[in-house]
Length: 146
Length: 198
Image 1: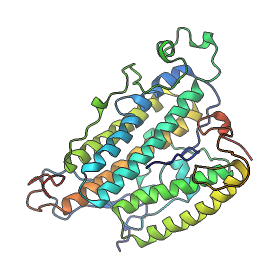
Image 2 (image 1 turned 120 degrees about the vertical axis):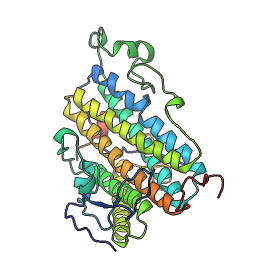
Image 3 (image 1 turned 180 degrees about the vertical axis):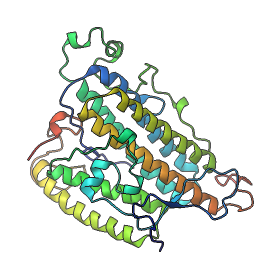
């Protein structure tokens, strides 16, 4: 497993003798530095090495801690690792983190659904039919503070 | 198949309606480098991809883009809620309003309706992945341009998130291209079309 020489994870790997007439993007090295899931969601990436904002416009807006934003943080970490694993399927450290976040997501989802109703039609919950309950995700009111 | 999850990928919470801003952000809903085109481009290119990594990556990024489409729709919706007619009259939003009221319609900011002519499915993995690299850069620049034109922090936080995703997707498509090349004829990667001739 290749370790990062650059602490920020901003360096990648190219083929030693790169053939002509090919566009190249350096491969992100394995075991790259990572943000915590909450920071990752705000920055739009789990990886500091890929965090390249426009004209220094860094997103620093912290999301309030709610059952919904907990799920969004975990969901985002899983999504980011899924894309990483699609091209780095041998990185065991990333795979372990992906699985840990999945476990936490499963628990977080149970907490959320008990309070706010089903996330999708596969959610099995007792009681009345709550799928239609307001608010829907695109509405301003969906940002409930708890 | 697809299952709808009743949540956004990233929260959209716009305190102040702003129809002028909505009329430029709509471009990332249905414009030439918008999220609708992105999702359909990747989800359509999947079928002719020859290797598992490429099928998986296009599926995963194409699905994420559908979530981004929903976020851009949420931005436009919240920017145009509770408007008085006087807030619309004489603004850049008026031409959109006359056709779509405050519905969310896939169109470019210029008024040109969404068209499949702005995406490509060539059926050759090197050509399609090269298109995807360019598409991510064009989407990034559109978000850069929105950041230049918007001073609403509630909107800009969401735009910064979406812009950063384009950077990450570009990286992954570049890596996918390299994984593809390693599986092809090392003396000539253009020897044949691996979608058809392997």
